Image (cartoon, rainbow, N blue to C red; front, side, top):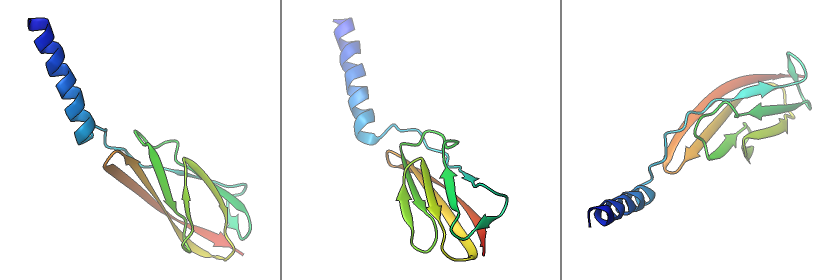
Length: 106
């Protein structure tokens, strides 16, 4: 009887965990990958969030209302200016974000 009780309690604990989201809190980080030291208009730039920890979903805001999803995303900017890049990582109902400004030159 003791073994059945322990097994039942473990099953209940797993169900509670699944319902209440026992997900770990993620930690967002990303790197900017470009072909040169200075990013130019029209140059493809890659943003890589593989350094983020415990992330299940990656949501990017890349300036000028450009939205993208995934661990790695690429974009070519069409204007010379400073862009605010933001990454939101999600794991269950827990989130973390990282933000960085980049300058795009003519």
